[in-house]
Image 1 (cartoon, rainbow, N blue to C red):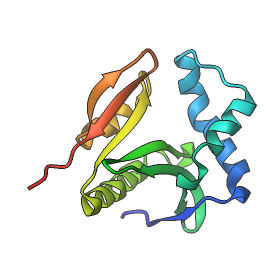
Image 2 (image 1 turned 60 degrees about the horizontal axis):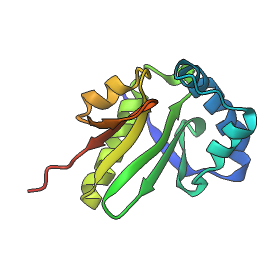
Image 3 (image 1 turned 30 degrees about the horizontal axis):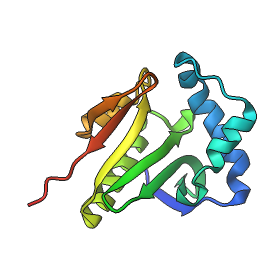
Image 4 (image 1 turned 90 degrees about the vertical axis):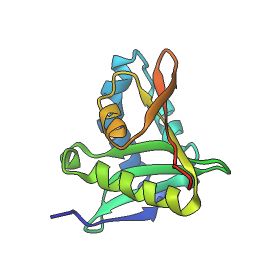
Length: 148
């Protein structure tokens, strides 16, 4: 049975949740990449492009973040995090399906960056994203719509 997800725009009242979410989901992957942020730097990342932030909800309770930007040529997943308690339950796949629907409606491709050793890369590959570049820290990935 699929979990019913909903989304709402993040507000300033969500900052504590978003910082905790970031710490729970990103610190270990950043440290593996030898990227060490201070709490102030994590807060800055949470606040960066805040208007693109959507809280992922299950039964009206916040369980994640989708920070999705819309550009003229693509959607860009800036940040995508789900609390560990809800990982491995198909929620990431459901969110990606929702993003793909938006991309199809807008006739846009999707881009994202993922840390080199972050296992979530496998999820993106399963959905048809391809690696189009990399640097010392991350892969750049893209999903191209096939236009007919």
